[in-house]
Length: 248
Ligand code: NAD
Image (cartoon, rainbow, N blue to C red):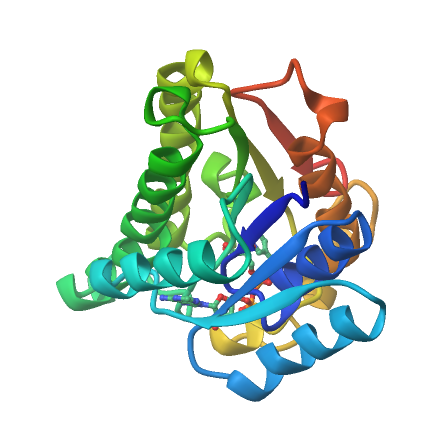
């Protein structure tokens, strides 16, 4: 039976690289996107041109009804989910606490935390043995920022990723006996559009000299770690974290 993966925020960056790699490994892939239908469709076309199977799924992961509709569509088209990559995330321009508003904090938390919870919940409903599922694997994309190892971090974003790490640890324990593994990858400074959309284009090149490996990472390097954690090669690994952060 074909394994089915859902990758959130898969139209670009780490999500895109992960969707492409999972398709190469034989997964049928749900390519979730927020707005950029053209980019999501390009990922689907690239997968299909290599003989794979994929489906673009529009949903704001912070919106419960949209998450429910996305999983229903995935069920109906690709079949039962066996792998979830919670990847979609946002950050805003770095600012001191004096300038943080409730609106901004809640926006970060609703995508980076509530969105991850909602997708985990829907995946568990389908994967858990107690619901007749075959088990499965979840990877939550966190961040090295959750460890707040540097003064250039974004404190609201970092706090949201700290919550993701607690979700990973707690859910891994909760669903281990249900045949579900839950792990995390914590990327460091990766060349994606996230920094530009957070108001800091070129950020990776600015800070890379402070990193032990003296360079930024690529989305493909992060995708390798995610894909390994999802795979049967990691069958005895749950509640674990891979630091994909150049030694930070
Ligand atoms: P990116 O900005 O290129 O990609 C994020 C994707 O998430 C975008 O396609 C965006 O549209 C999507 N998204 C945002 N909000 C969404 C929502 N509500 N619903 C659905 N999709 C939504 O950034 P990236 O670097 O590829 O980020 C992927 C993940 O990696 C994020 O969770 C991010 O926090 C994490 N991360 C990135 C870095 C880095 O240096 N790039 C470092 C650490 C962690």
